[in-house]
Amino acid sequence: MTLPASPMPAGFSDPVFEGQAAFRALMDAMVRPGLVVTAGAALAPPAGLMPAAAAAILAICDFETPLWLSPALQGGAAGPYLRFHAGAPLVTDPASAAFAVLDGRHEAFRLTDFAQGDASYPDRSTTVLVQVASLTAGKQIVVAGPGIAGIAELRIEDLPDDFGAQWQANRAAFPLGVDLIFVSGNQLVALPRSARLVGEAA
Image (cartoon, rainbow, N blue to C red; front, side, top):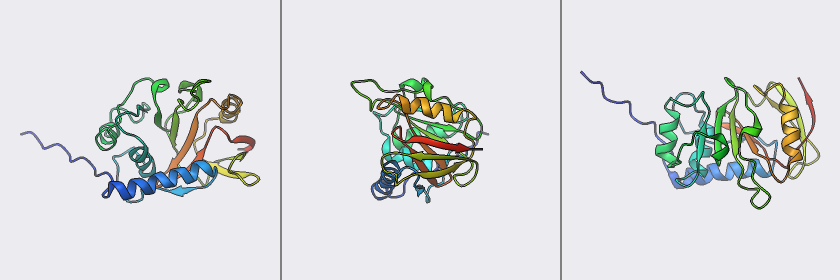
């Protein structure tokens, strides 16, 4: 006897309204680095994919947006879910992705693995969503730059030990380089390539 396939978890119940709300949250986070915003609170994505990450991809990706999922997310239900609800093609090379999702709880990451953009089209870089255990505990980083009044202090769990060096190199390449969005549950905070790392603590 063949068991029926598990139903696909739902996406946005109101794609226009919820998609616009998630997009606004993302834009608020990008223009105000260090601001923690809520997105995807009503979503129940497949295991391994956090609601805010799912909301971000559903809001900004479509059939013309190459998406890369890290090994921790490949092979599970996250890929079919995002492909079905967002229409985004999944790619195997992180450097060919417009957006990427990885799970910092289970794997380290290297910013240089992703598209950096080029002098003519610096926007052709990868925006990387990193799922972490917490946005209120863990390693402290202090950033400054556009959109930040003075400095912003962030605490992010599951950062690589060499994150500071990686980010300094990423910032030195500006206007090239990747943008990061850290996700925990239904919350996210952005670290655009324009942000300067001015301090960090264990």
